[in-house]
Length: 173
Image 1 (cartoon, rainbow, N blue to C red):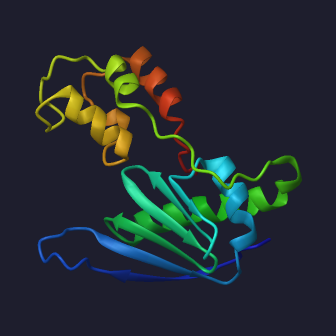
Image 2 (image 1 turned 180 degrees about the vertical axis):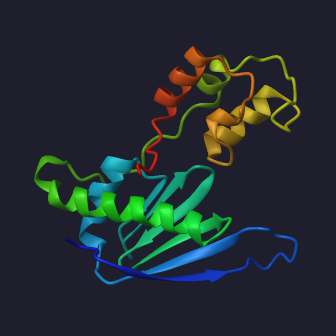
């Protein structure tokens, strides 16, 4: 087991109007060796070899895994951070345990194409998601700033296809 525990720190961003926090989890183990395997399993947003670190876009958040720390850019509270950290701890340890069956990746997964996302949206520019057009929504989903299910008019079939297209890795309870 690479990670058994961690110590959390929370910081408010410099913007005084921000309602979210940043979470830093200081790990009790070094995860540098598992990062290329996690990049394969979780589909990293950015991977760096030196110094080793892996950035993930997850539920409209940027999460960066360092050898001895995890940084989450936006969490509402400690409970939300704990849920994400427990999921990551499981993913790290399971990936490490199964690494012999996983091909490590030192590359970045291609991000979803905006037009592929847009094709699955209603394209009626209803603005119910809070954005002016479906195209703007598709761009934000592609960048990881919005979740695909933030579209209230997405039908179940399109929702399923979009989920598959984006290949999200949700935490399990």
